[in-house]
Image: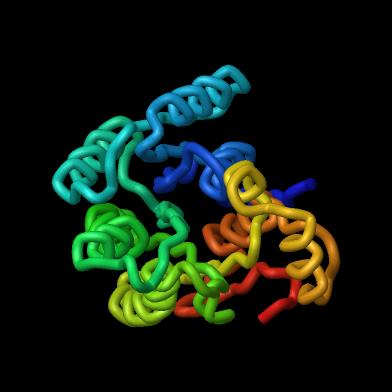
Length: 253
């Protein structure tokens, strides 16, 4: 797909979590195409390094750091290192997440806490790490990635859907907290996006037929469709958009 061009994004400094694959990869690529300087972090070192190398070969200004977002101290250290290289971030995309399937009866305390440590907790501490720099430069944009799975009450995902439902509350409160600093905070909530992982693990002809039947607009939702909404919210074109939830699901919920 052809993305709109937001000229104000050129030379902006962006941070993307979970940027090595899926929606995160599409966001990293889209921001790079806009001319932004993009730093991204991910647990998958091999995929992250490969993506960064490919984009740099194409002329993009991109840097990658491998880190486990469950380790808050290591995450803060990685962000500080990236900030030292690129300068303060005016854009932060809290994309990282993992929709691992699980049975309600099998969930124990350790598993529950781990799913929140992956899908929700990093948004708080990554945001804390970038906000001082945003304040110093006069503002910024934070975009948090949600999921329509909680709106649909999807089974087999209760820890994930609970964490993702909290993303909207976090977004709305953080927008109020940071509005006086000219920092906008929004949520982008995708439907079933056809990433490589989704195709490999969960896609079947029957599941896809049922999902498409619920869509108002037929056809697959690509990672690039979500990235298009994300970069709109990163741009000054969306300067009066904050505390809101933008759903990209082809009209299911």
